[in-house]
Amino acid sequence: MNLPSNPSETFVKNNPHLYRFQEAAIKSSTMEIESSKKLERSSKRIRQSTKPLMNKLEFGWYSVLSIGQWNGKLVSSLMAQSLRIKIASGAWYKPDMSCLLDGHVTCFECKGNKGKNIDRGKLALKVAASQYPWIDWWLVWRDPVSGVWRTQLVLP
Image (cartoon, rainbow, N blue to C red; front, top):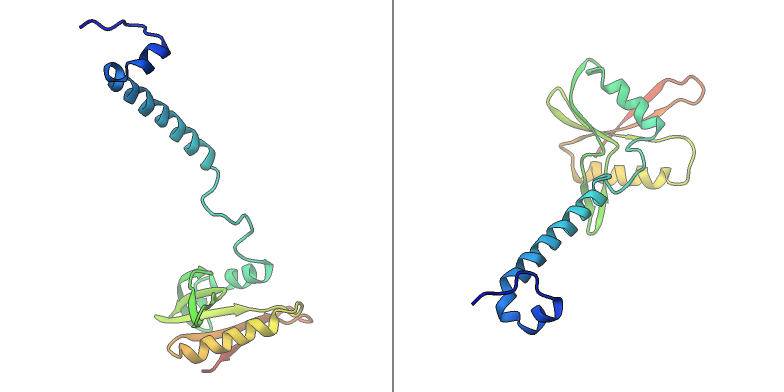
């Protein structure tokens, strides 16, 4: 049976048994075009948040540690906000920085002098230190008068 090479849409709709393979090919090609358009639109940025990963205070402490040595100990595997630690059922804590100090896991929390979340951040740090005693936990802040970095080891 010879099919017309250029049938009208109504003829194809009225005779689907004759043109089902052609319709499938047309549908798959349109789906490929739509999916490529979606890829073009979604290729802007993978990360959802456009905010910077660290604030000025955290970036300052990160640059101190990125030299590779702190308090006479070798700093390696320095990462910003890479650990997520469960401190209670449904509550999570993410330290500002984590690294290996002479092969020992160490986490740092940077706190400024202003803001209302300072006490809540310190509380989360204390809870994390008590639940994970094999990790060294440090509270870090910058002295507002002298500009010198101050550190305090948080005990479990």
